Length: 380
Ligand code: CMC
Image 1 (cartoon, rainbow, N blue to C red):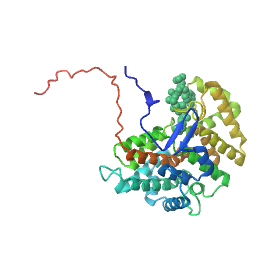
Image 2 (spheres, rainbow, N blue to C red):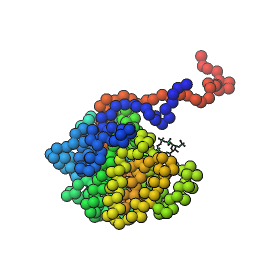
Image 3 (tube, helix red, strand yellow):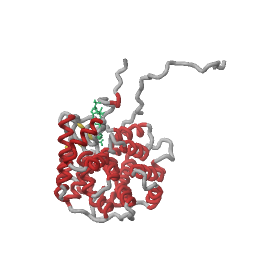
Image 4 (cartoon, rainbow, N blue to C red):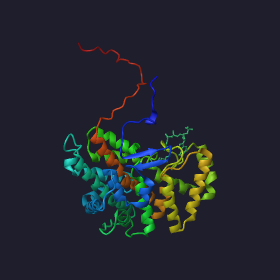
């Protein structure tokens, strides 16, 4: 019998130098640095630089990256025009996927105009930086459009995270809020061979283009077993209502064999390394917005579910309510994950291309035995 690893669980398919997930020690390293240290000390732009280049930037390198990022922040008019044609009821992940697809199709040197569209490393790095720079405008406009609002132009005097919030809300919140948001972006940036990153690597391995890989990754991230879980956590919070209702709600949900979103992980079985840092950011927001009810519901569901099932929260559990407190619509949560993870995806695309092998696994056939069409006679 062939030993099938359903869902590729436990299968090591390649090397990566981008990040290291160690479930034994509950640690996550980006290019060797613990993610908690990066979240506590770095702006998101510096972490993006680290993921792409392998080292944290010098002051000069960070200034250069920021200059390019600021030049590419604005929402292009034709991207806005295409977004405006996406139905308002469509999921914002579909809107985002469409916008990235358009941006790719307009980059004739780096997309489908040539058969081998994979490009060279410098051009692909430049494309990565431009996508990283423009995604906040697309995500922010998505939320504003659903609220019937015009886009807000970027501000050159603000760093990435503050500008992202400015373009979404038309104001810059207090520093504690910007800091919590910046930490969430860093925590979401990279996580080795997760489903969306692997999707990007599979697409890249055919020597397709960077944009196609990112579009495919967005599609993989949308699902509730992956990035869609942060949105799903808020739906669960809305369903439960308050901490006092947790036990009864959980009785019913578990009797119905529902998956409790924001809990469980393929790799971490004793807790997600990113959760304590994001939970601390959530606590800051709870204090800032004076919402002890959110903390009470969070704690009640976590302690009851862990006690009953021994399954621990993942990053989406604290980030969902954190984004809600900041003022993001629930539908915007997974697009925020895209804006962060594009740095990890593109780092993996560059790594895949640098030592490429077509990704093409095997399957064990378990369909009908060989059979033939009645009356068919083979041509001589
Ligand atoms: N709620 C209820 N039961 C669960 C959950 C959950 N959240 N997670 C795992 N289980 C149960 C599952 O039903 C199964 O039970 P049984 O053995 O009785 O059939 C057992 O635990 C093993 O689960 P699994 O689904 O086989 O484990 P996996 O490693 O394939 O799945 C997972 C990992 C993330 C898909 C799963 O835990 C899950 O569906 N969680 C909810 C969705 C979620 O929060 N996703 C975010 C993942 S992390 C961040 C990200 O990528 O965005």
